[in-house]
Each structure stands twice: as structure tokens, then as C-alpha cells.
Image 1 (tube, rainbow, N blue to C red):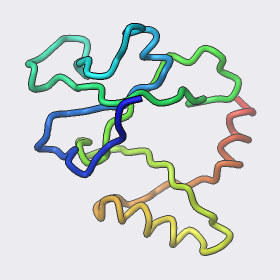
Image 2 (image 1 turned 60 degrees about the vertical axis):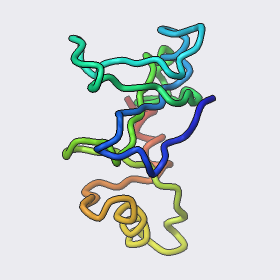
Image 3 (image 1 turned 90 degrees about the vertical axis):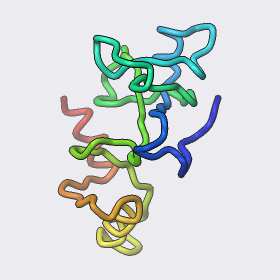
Image 4 (image 1 turned 45 degrees about the vertical axis):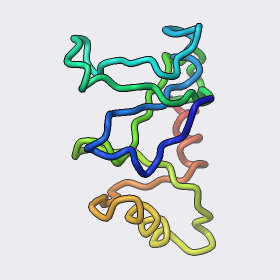
Length: 130
């Protein structure tokens, strides 16, 4: 429900987020879209509040063995502060190799330099080991 991130979601526009269904049901069972929250425990100004613009399906975040997921918040990379960013890229590595994955990531933001890559199969295997 709601919308996806848009090119107009930039560092100079009001902050937005997508949340998953688990978080939406936990805090806003009557409807989360348009609701606002602060990224820290103590509220700041209304300008710092993040507006929920969409609700997406819940996924297993850290381990396939976890059955009680706390919920997830997704913010656009175009509004992210410099630092660690996790991206998921759909790609057939066997077709063109990791250099194509790097190219796709840098097409989002030229300043992003991938330093750790993994396949979905490897991530699933690692999840089942913990």
C-alpha cells in the first residue's frame, strides 16, 4: 500500500520511509501511511520527523530461523547520511560477473563502493548456520 521511493525523495525533501507489515500492525493497525515518527527515542522537530509513505511485505531480515521479526524501516539511499548502506541487487552473476553488480550499485550513487558482496544462496546458508 502507498507508494515506492521516488526520485524526488532527496536530502533536501522531507524524510520518508517504507515500513513492513509487521511494524505497521504493531504501531498503526488502523493505517500507517501518512503517520510520522522520529528516528531516535526522543522526538525532535516536525521537520526531522519521517513520514511513512508505503507499507511493504515483511521479510526474514537476519536469519531464516527467526520467527518473531520486530519489523523493518526502509529509507531511500538518496536521503541516507554518509556511512554504511545495505543494498540488495537482483542480478544473474553467472551471466556477467561481479563487475556488473558493482556497476549497478554505482548507478544508484557513484560514491558507493561495495566492499562486501554475497549471493542469495550464500546468505541463506549462513542464516541457517546461526
